[in-house]
Image (cartoon, rainbow, N blue to C red; front, side, top):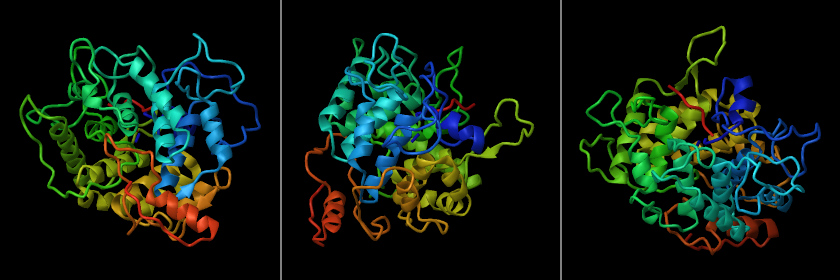
Length: 417
């Protein structure tokens, strides 16, 4: 999951050595007043991550059968511009978006995913998807803001949004035949080279590709056409790195999973470089990136390779999640869910209760947690989301006191060296 999340980095990272987001390329919105808007999750300044953290909270709640309040959903949709785009945060939504409004592809993409997953305001989600299609770069990808060079994180999260709204991503071609998948594959490091299987965030000045762990986790999901709340693949396979120039998106995604699994084999967590100007130059654990890697490994059929990392997160990351707020807490919930861990008892912490307490009281909550044994929400690229999921129906049924379950089928990130 990963920005993919613009300010979680500015808001959270400054305090917690950074865990959940890339620095926004956009100009900041006007600073909000001391009193935060009603309906918003979290208590920190939302200037750079308001839409991101709200949407990520919805995604985590959805997989735990929690229905967000109408007030919270209305706040998110109220951030949307008439064009369908979202900014990182709009303090004054009474003022229409115009040419000076800095649109954010990452915020738009995650908001679209959230609205689709909670099965509310689908028209607004489709409007957001249409805007994303309209700002696709000529190389097939997307940058953080419209017109900026494509990067792996932005392209991946947009793919997830379009796929969840039913767009056949592989058919979304530019004038020269490029697709979002070819844009991502152009950032993959060949298996024959050092750091083979990894992805770069963007090419260097001379076109060189430098492995970026967050971009790799994002690209694994993107090349499989999956969103952030992707769940677990039923197929279990040994990671491998396939050589060659004519690889399918799935093969290239598996190469990325191989690199992540190999990296986490050395130690169960990923690291981030010290913040600029920090006195301590020792690399620090990157909790958010580790959680993203866990989700990517589970989604690509390597849940067993992520178990040590989940255990490490369980022991070490709960304090980070509480301080980091809704985005950080949601990331741990997504990692727990993807690997079958219990998010309601994760290192002695009920992450779902913690997340729910960070925003308006949910409309409905199902108990006990469905994570260890419950069904996995689907995340196919062209699925029909018009019906209610099993999770929603159970949650609604329990909230209404009916006690009846109905069965129906159902990543603004920092650039790391």
